[in-house]
Amino acid sequence: MKKIYSLFALLSLFMLSGCGVYNFTGAKPIDAKTFQVNFFQNNADLVEPGIDRTFTLTLQDLIMNQTNLNLVSTGGELTYEGEITDYRITPMTATAVSTDGTAGAAQNRLSIRVQVRFANKKKETDDFEKSFEFYYDFPGQELPTGSVLSEAIRVIFERITQDIFNESLAKW
Image 1 (cartoon, rainbow, N blue to C red):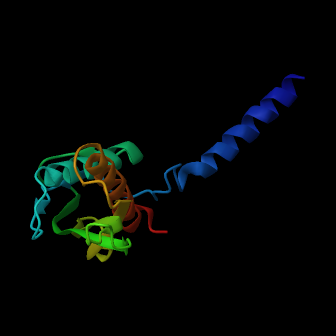
Image 2: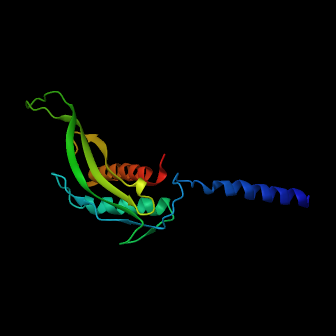
C-alpha cells in the first residue's frame, strides 16, 4: 500500500512539473522580472477627464494580477507606453421622427483607441507599436455620464488591456 502512495505522489509530481511552460493566464515564461507602465496621456480630440489615469492603472493591475512580474517606475525590463488617441461617441441606429419633428439615435457607441509601444529589453524582437480599440454600445436616450460612462470605460479598458497583454506576453 505504501508503494502505491509513493507511486501516486511521484506521478503527481511529474505531471505538475509539466505545467512550467504555461501558467493559467496563458502567459509564456519570460526572462524579465520587472515591468513599467508609463503614463498614457489622453491626446484624443474629445477629452474625458481622468481616463488617462484610469487606463494606466488598469493596465498595471492586469499585468500584476496575471504575471509574477514586479512593477517598477523606471528601468523596467518590459516597458509599456503610449497615448489615448481617440475617444468618440457615434450614433449607431436612428429612430423614427418623433412628434416634435426631431430624430434621434436609438443606440450610441463609445469607442476608445489607444496607441501602445511595447519594449522588451531581454528580447527586442518582441517589441511592437500598435493601436488597440474597443467600444461600448448604450441606449440613445442615455447620456455617457455617471454609471453608464463608468461601465463603458470599465468594459472598454478591460478588453483593450487584455488585448495588449495577449499581444505582449501571451503570444497566442
